[in-house]
Length: 246
Image 1 (cartoon, rainbow, N blue to C red):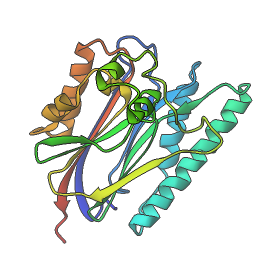
Image 2 (spheres, one colour):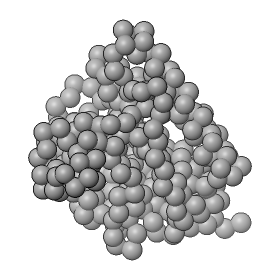
Image 3 (cartoon, rainbow, N blue to C red):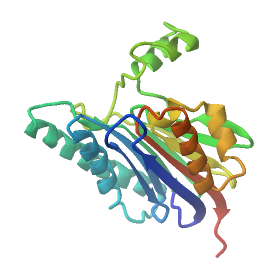
C-alpha cells in the first residue's frame, strides 16, 4: 500500500464551524507514507483535541513501509501508542471519558485499506458512483443492522450521535478494516460527522467529481458552512492518479 509507487493527489480542510468554540478535529496527509487520516476528539475541557492530536502526532511518525503488511503493522503500532497516551490522560484527569474517532486510508502499490473506529467515514467515488467503505460504530447503526428501526427513523433517532467505539475510551481498541484494489481515477473522501451530518452521500459525490482535491474540499466545506455547521468539520480528499512512471 505505498503512495510512492502509486501517485495520489490530496488535500484536507478543517473548520471549527459556527457553533463550537474550538476545533477538536484533526487530519493528517502523508502521501509519501501512503497514509491519510481524520480524527474527531471528545472529552471536553480541551481533552478532545488532545486525543485527536495524539493520534495524528503518533501516526505522523509512520515513515515509509516496505510492504502492505508492514504499513498496516506500523499504523496499528502508532495507533496503540496514541491509545495508551489517551488512557493515561484520562486517568490523570480523574477517569473522565476522553477519546477520538479515527478514519484512515492506507495505500501501497495499488492496494488500499480503510481502517476506522467511531463514526468518522471513508467513502470511495468510482465510475460516477459513491460507496461508504466504513460502517459507523454507532448505536443507531447497530439498530439498523438488527432491523429494529428504519432508515427514516434513524435520521431522527434521539441517540443517533452516540458512538460505540473510539480510540482511548475502552481498555482495547476496536478497529474495523476493509481492503481493495485502487484504480486510476478513484476518489477517496474521509470526513468527520460534521461533514456527513449536513451533506448527503450523493452531494459528496457531486462535489468531488470533476474537481481537484483542493477544490472538492473547499466546495464541501462551503456547503457545510452554508447549512449551519453545528459541529467541527473536517474533510480529506485523495485521488488516485495511477502508477508513477519509472
